[in-house]
Length: 549
Image (cartoon, rainbow, N blue to C red; front, side):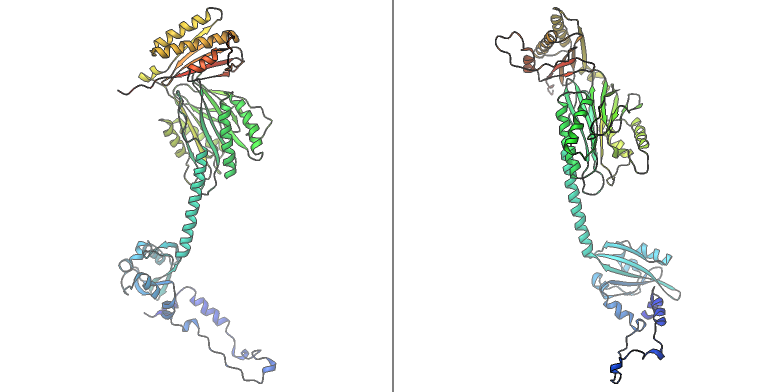
């Protein structure tokens, strides 16, 4: 094989030869300025000739190149030459044999198809950092070469193992940092959602981006007692540990404020002041909602957050647009509450902006797409969660955090419906109110087939709550009994907004023992102010779990 003839066809060889011809020194100017005036009389040592590239033996050069070199000829890529580095890496290769059988390493690396492309297009191609069978990583450059009517490909491979290992160590470090960040983020979210009696709830969280920064999205489900449930979702603007820390503080504060059983807008009012104290430079959005199974509504308030979407039993999706106030941390705004129906068979979705916001789309278009996806979504809350995330195109490379909270109010039928009952009685006051309430409670609990001990405790609790309302409250008064598959709830409402408190009655006191008795016999009790004035005082008893047959 004449390598001098091949080298003359390599890209750049002819250009370099032409450049040398243009810059060659003419014979009549070789002596000008070559010897200083002071040394003109001294004999100058003749310069040593420098060999031109065309005079070098290409094979000797390629044999000593530390990179891997292989010269392939023809459409079947027959081996014309491999240098010493190539032989040291993969062993000796016979000349004149097609590469598909003689160079299995190229086939394993997927380079045979690349060689065909280079031969057809006449353009060089490079693939970076491919790991070869010898365990080393190489960057391969395939360059077309020509000789008369013959075409070939010069394969030049540079060992980049050190760089590849360093890059892999860096990627592994970034993965560990990201896993740590995501673990931190998830530890600030509820590990297990509370399970309300009347709702089925599921949530999902997808961290955004591939970097290690954590975000400030959060969600929570809080059982308030008396059959009511609070649902919250929020988003602290920005990313990083600071945003996650603010998120954790706000989530903890929401759980504490929820125990006060305040209306949603009052909860947001408290959070707004707290957010300003935590960090005046951090702004957060939030939706706080309360589901009341007795009313079949979702009462909500929003601080700059996206609207709740509700799908009714017929598949119609309604958007809870109003009322919406500014984000938390802005201060000086009076929030207000609104309501949206959430009856049996309905599904509600709370979400953060990462699910619907895209750089190349209007935000309303993203919400409209989510509405369409929710309209056709059926199944359990977790199935709906996953379907909404998929329909929004959320991938591991998504550039923003995504949090989704789905709640369903199931339409119960068959045997399951027998486990959920409501009964209510309006109390007109007077001396006959207490005996009438006891008789009503006894009859209802008997019809619900409660055991004797639970029947008697329920009647006693109803009697004490009604007596307390008659003594300290004002009309209108109502007694409500409710049973679920897990508990019995007794609730009394009246028109006075003074909340009772548990206190220790002295031996001579004729009153003050009713709430203490209720708190002692019941699993839980509480009170809250009702919209439009008045209060509700409730207690609940855990039902015995059915024994397995």
